[in-house]
Length: 166
Image 1 (cartoon, one colour):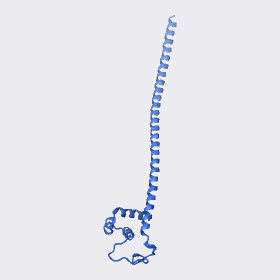
Image 2 (tube, rainbow, N blue to C red):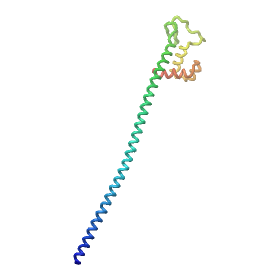
Image 3 (tube, rainbow, N blue to C red):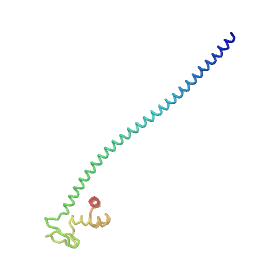
Image 4 (cartoon, rainbow, N blue to C red):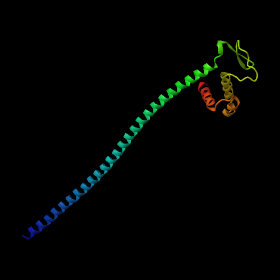
């Protein structure tokens, strides 16, 4: 019986070793699975951050689209105003009394009208035409304003209209 006891004892020890081996193996696989789950949670957090950033970009894009539309409306309005201002300027430059205008010696006259008298103040249309010429010559707005007695704002408007038309 002693032999049988020894065999049973050895078999019990081997069986316990196998059980312990399996327990340690299961434990390490659980740890690995837990690590993968922890990594999965990190991936989910990153995915949530990316989704939040995408939503933020969509909101910014929608805001930019609305600002672009608003800017387009303002640009159209400004172009309309510029057209009206150009029409007013053109109507001011039209000769009075339906006479034909002609140029003589660099000055413009209206047919049937008397030539300007030296020392007489030029008409509004002539003043604006002289301002346009001086702007195209590259003279400063302050110099033109002082010489022709025009407001600087008028000259800035004339200059911007000349830039647009050219």
